[in-house]
Amino acid sequence: MPKKRSKRYNEAAKLVDSANYYSPEEAIELLKKMPATKFDQSVEFHCVLGLDPRKADQQIRGTVMLPHGTGKTVRVLAFVSADKENEAKEAGADIIGDEELATKIIKDGYLEFDAVIASPDMMKVVGKLGRVLGPRGMMPSPKNGTVTPDVAKAIAEIKSGRVEYRLDKSAIVHTIIGKENFSQEQLVDNFKTMFSTILKAKPAAAKGVYVKSLAVTTSMNPGVKLDVSACRKLLDGVK
Image 1 (cartoon, rainbow, N blue to C red):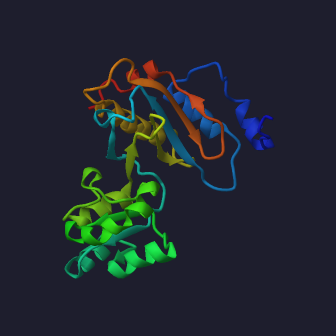
Image 2: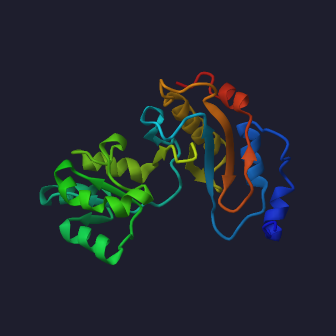
């Protein structure tokens, strides 16, 4: 039985030719023309890659600073020792964590935060949270810069628009590249930065077609398929 869609969704779908592949500029313009919701929707980037996520040498994961941020307010939890508490607070940490908070997360399911930063000496505490934070993509890791002695820098970057990307089990990278109220130019700039980052992250072990498909969408609207060749042309001159 087909899923019942709202009137607003159906109106938005009429704007999209499902048989067509759009340039990033055309696609973002379409998203901004779609009927508005009662909240400022996130603009999402979805990329299907020709990788095998079961193989360690075909995994991609990292972080990227979007030039115009994400438009999202991020609540940062910092696990730091007492001598770094003031540093974390001044950098904008919303919550300062220690062993007592780690216990609260495990026993009470406390999750009033969106990102977690830890100094290396606190990993003996944070390591206990793998089963809780791991499935939510919030487990601190040196690979994505969330386990670092420079907690102030990491907190500031997350607050100003750093996003994490990673390949999921279906070989897709999903991430946010802004908000619906961003200008056309801001969203195109963020898209270019995200797509360029994915291309540069191509593993040496990748075989065949690397980028299989691309799409952009907003939280409550249909996706718009992108022309991969047009996306690559958009990056001409991008370092």
